[in-house]
Length: 497
Length: 66
Image (cartoon, rainbow over all chains, first blue to last red; front, side, top):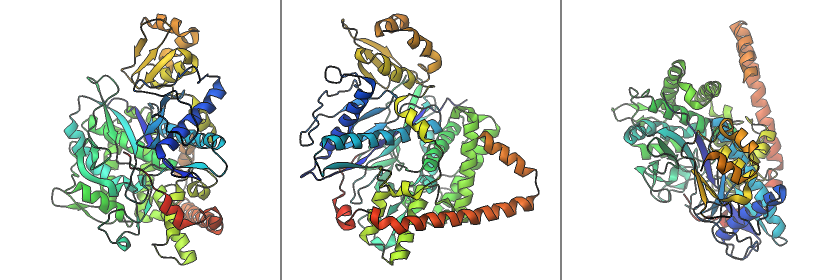
């Protein structure tokens, strides 16, 4: 039986600093994270001048210099919802806490967007007049630079990695038909611009390998980073670097949900008989992205062909059998697993009839419809910079400016649950322990990271609480304990560490 | 989700034609609603869109990331 697919989404945001001469992206990113910390500190009464309670063991700064011209150190912090918020590769990055189900991963990804929005507002208060930092949830600057939106899934270490790679590959290459965020044009220098006026994925242009360790160059479809942040003898964390950052709740939910189901099936040996091996995954990834009709046949290793829709259809059929055999329990919530299957089927069938039917649910379709609508109304060519501007501004996270939000898309979440998720951790993973300790014992938390908490009780040595199992430290396990311990010292005594 | 399941159960007890007709009219209704929303946004998009599109696109430069 497959293990629970504990999952999460990490997003590197694009940033633009306006009204500042020679803007520095690292400074701008640090400004955002610091601005958020100052807002939060006011809210919950944490004193960040003398204390740095929300830090990560891998390095932090307590530099709260907010002047944009000052280069700050890389910032790395943990939030009370269990997420990690930091500066990475000159971008602000938010890593959601470990989530128990795909819907929860969606919820905490949207909570991250809210964290970035508040960071922007906070930054505006310390910047001069006419200066601002604007944040974009996308993956490309349209000039050949890409930044990622990664997913993580907990897998059983017993499953051979080679089997995961071969069985998940055709799924990864084709899932963009519902998970793509859409892009005007291409960044492949050798392709004539008119050949790819619009494509399904933001990221397909940037993948060059099938399998590998890299994440910033020669990006592979399946990433081999082996850093489980958990007991390495039992768990693997599959680090998925292929996906687009989605604005649409449907796209994120389906992306994480279908992937969790496929990985569970692989773990249970349920796909061993499914032969959809693609002959050329990397060129196929681009072929799928460039084909808005979704009808283009992809060469299979067995000499046949299949379209992206057909490949997805095969995975869906297998998943239905898997559900019938009781497999969806590993999705954390069987009813949610069934809802994922229902939406997956609905979306594939709508895509088959007419992708435009999904203009109110999927990112790439919504964006495509918007740019084609603009083209028709103003009679402009694909090379018009206004179309590129629409593409970028679709991903502006400010609700008044974001063309995604102004389109009024179908929702899966309610605003009030996102509001709660900004500060409250998920209840069914170890993120609960992390988040609650930060909320209650902040002054004694010296550092926190994914698989441990380090407490400083004012005496030597520092006390480390390991959290090697992502399914321990849940509300069920520790709620009463944290409730009954008024101080960190009591907590550690009760934990016996 | 419970609500949706209930709705589905109710529809399945009715005749297929009724369901199909309703689905068809719902689909037309929906595509009209989508079109109206798109038209509304297209009406106001030039006010929302960054003033100088060319400059905005040119200046949007990111350092590469993951």
